[in-house]
View 1: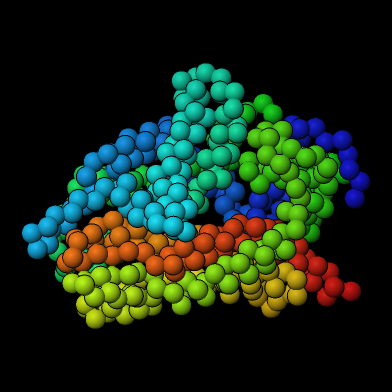
View 2 (view 1 turned 180 degrees about the horizontal axis):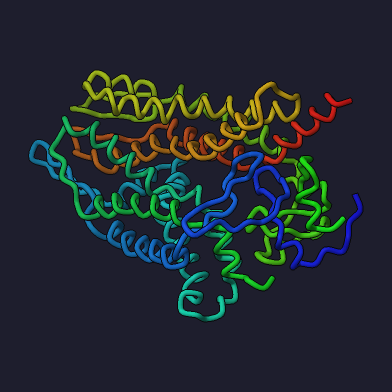
Length: 211
Length: 218
């Protein structure tokens, strides 16, 4: 096949499926609808309303909830006259002895650092667009970082872990849940909201329209 | 050939690679073959991830190897009234069954045994099917890939359970819980299998199908 000189404008009339590489005409679906690849059925474009607003909203709420989750009491345990209050920091610092220490860092990253980093990166990349300004200098880099970190942000998995742990100790002692636990529970809803509202393809076109 | 013809050239499906183009996997922008960075998002471009399968097998092997000590060594060291008990991943789930917490025992077994083992086989099968061909249809393999990518992170539940139990149950002489060496092995095993799944380039599935179709035509 001979390659003609294809202008960027021409190329933007086409789309290649990110999962199977099938080249096809780019059709932007109607608002609220999404398009799938005819060959492998992967999602191509999801034309969500208010993508920027919704993504910013989830970034800001993640940051606020995470502050609450880290600083408020998490869970307290009462048994045989003893009380043990555990914060999220205690859970993070659980693996401090010897060769388990790196695991402490990993747990901290999975449940606090990466979610906060993602929220910050999304805010940095998208806030200027929301207020009608030019994207910040490193907007592209930080949005890519936010997308790459997505599988490693595990706040919602942590919440399920907490529930399983509570079932194990509930016979041993009285358990009471603090505000931090509920902040984490709310984070799960934010994750679900973000997953349903974020379309990479659309955001990239808004971030860098004339390229 | 004009761009407009490309996508409508009969019923024959054309990939970006066949049209001498590279699609950016981060933002979907097309570029001429040979361009190394995406002009929209600046991500590195590659028509097919280099050494995808080698990296898949390497991470997968590391994940499988670490999964063995993760099951042999204790995950939790529980001290109650002076006596110490050690429980492995499966042992911990069996304990939950004794408490009558069947549903939670099911979650733990599902997240720590069923998902990791199924994931090892799923990733292995995907990579094997690209190298050796498979009777599984492209859609089945694609579904397998998507499920594997989505569900793999959930195995981390047990690591978090151990972290929370350790933080929470420090009631001195009455009861205390500490993490066992299996926690590290298991966490690493989960991370390595996630990296293995991420290294897999799903476009290879469809390349292998095109390849076998071409061979059948001949």
